[in-house]
View 1 (tube, rainbow, N blue to C red):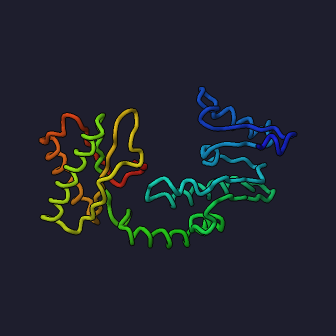
View 2: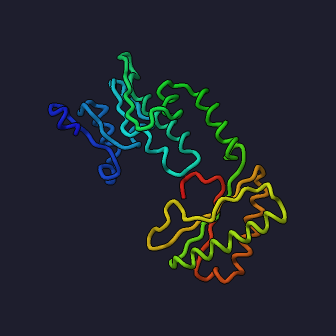
View 3: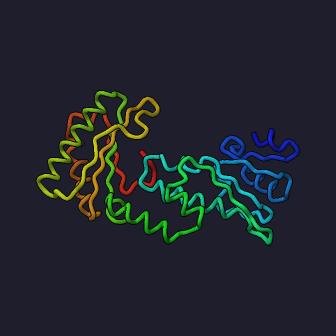
Length: 238
């Protein structure tokens, strides 16, 4: 589309395919910095930490895609990414302009990023985290069951959920349990993935819960066909 709209422009493309060879990343960036191209089209990798003094226009397409990754940090990461991308324009004496295309122009991560308003974004985001008991207000423990057999994955996570809720009822009703449910990536490499979450303000309580569940699961009938993994305050979507 870029080549069609701007037939006289020299265009470089930067993504996983064009940078998979050794030195590919650096070659593309150097070529663009040396003005051997007029337009650089790429994925998120082009926005972080690169200084191109002669760039005067940055366009961000589908800026809201990262809001839908099933991660409590989605708004924060979207805001961060947009601010980083916007910072690529006008880094020299020539003024810069940023165009953001989005299907959710009213979302606070979009509006505050467009305005460069860090404090307002923080105030809105921390209120959301407090309402939902998300980090840094509270902590999250993720338990992930993986199995080659879908039925055994389902039964394994059901068993784990029952043990978890039983412990919560008997020891600490303040723990909030979410699930069990299929993971956001429910099947990968011919394995089935099921998750359950627990939230609490005290990290030590979740560590204790993890140790108990790990022990219970290791002695259960599901240990042979299912693997159990834990993560705390996960940085990626499961």
